[in-house]
Length: 192
Length: 185
Image: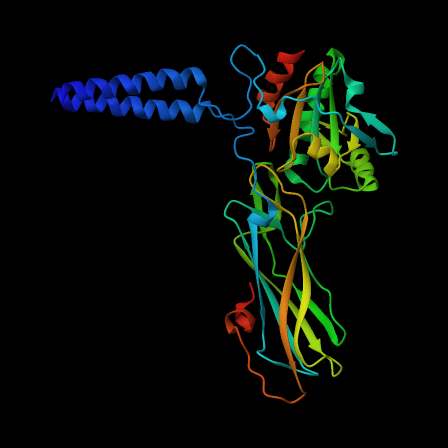
């Protein structure tokens, strides 16, 4: 019995030391935000395994945002905030029909308790509707795309950054066989 | 068995006392009694020259003799904007006692900052106010001289003799910064 009581005392003291430690850690300067490259990862997809000349196709960039972080949506809550954008640098023979951005979510944060911010968090899929013209070079082509975003956590923001993403496209002759890929991303129901 | 328990208890007790004295701290924070306790990386006096919104040089050393809170912020940074009422209040409260705020707009354009500081109203204790302290432009070079910025807002409290007393990453807590400013005045 005495042994059990002593063990209990040891455990209480241990807990106390942990509590003191937690309480002694200042709110400031204790948990610096990560680098933007650690906060967001990207993966790119193309809707067709081969893109026939003259045909429209889609490309998607799936952006995964670290837990505890968010980024402004494409339509942020006010004009000073930096929107998320996806901008392709198209090689000759490709045209952009449309960039498709999902709606953000209105979320209130401790630093903006009265005004909700329209943000992306978790995973978000940004899409581009592209066309390979008759003049597009046959074979494998890498289309560079720039993702621009500005991320924050609950108390601090990371500077706005531009992240390069590459779309791998294989162009084939007009009328050649082509198959849809990644229906989980490109089907009408999968837009987020 | 009793000896084992005694030894364990004594070890825990010593740890608790030691931790209590050390404050378990690994980051910059004033030690008890108000003495500055800064991380080694922050101990130097940053020798920086900002540009004001008209392109004129503003040397940090020009503020020697004053306690300065250098606040790296951005018009695009919502937590930075959220703490501006606290900063306006600090300037109002301590401006006549040898203190000044110095806002360093970062990743921004001069014209955007200029429009923002002259038109954006903040609710400061029920009163609508614009920013009442000097604002200059920050840059990557300047941030580097402060040891680099990991996020915004980041603020540095500078002593009257130009040394960094404390760094604050993220939105400020008013009670904490008031305590720190008062300790330096």
